[in-house]
Each structure stands twice: as structure tokens, then as C-alpha cells.
Length: 161
Image (cartoon, rainbow, N blue to C red):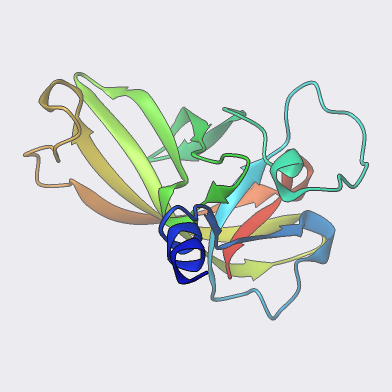
């Protein structure tokens, strides 16, 4: 019996620390919290509530955000599986930011909201594409920028549980 319990425990897998708030559920309690933005799929025109969290989170949905006075397209990078998904492994990425540079957004903090938009502080990290994920040597390799994002382009936000 002990062997069965130990064997079962050793081969256990899975884990989940991601929660999801639909965009119409965001209230003042979420302001100031770290979130991962989940954008609507371009072809998604329905507002059904899926049974499972992973149905909310599309694979590589994309959105254009105005940063540094330029329109930059980001894609969602999701590492979510049937029995596990971890909050810290989800991010937004732009692979054509500048010559040989990729930018990633691992952290976003909601600063403010109104009826149709949320103000989000984005923590931006610059990577050199040819150095296999290593940070760029440029002086602005990490910076923050606050941007207003229309709620109409968001499905919701992921939160860490």
C-alpha cells in the first residue's frame, strides 16, 4: 500500500495558477494588480462563456498597441496545456520591433479604467533576436510605458491565483 501511495505521488503532474476575469468583470479591486492581457481573437464575434479557462485564452491572438509613438503588433505567447499552465510563462511579444530586436511584455499593471478603456502600465523588455533570448545590450532594454487600451479589443485579463 505504501508503495502505491509513494508511486502515485512521484508521478503526479499538473499545476495551475491562472485565473481569468472577463473584461466586463474588471472593477476597482483589480486596479493596481499585475495582469496578463488577453485580446479578442479577430474572428471571435460571440460573447459566450466557455466552460474551461483555456477556452478563453486564444493561441497567438494579436493586437496593435501604440508605443513610443509607433504602432506595434504584439502576439500572445501562451504556454497552456490540458493539465497545467503557469501565470509567469504567459507574455506578449513583438518580433519586429527594431533591427534584430524583440520586445516582450511579461508584466502589465492596470492603473485606471473607465467605461470603454483601461490604462495599463506595460513593463517592456528588449531582447536581441540572434542571441537566443538574451537581453539586448542597448541602454533601454527595460522600460515602462502606460497606454490606454479599448475594452472592445480585450476578452479579459489573466490574474495569478
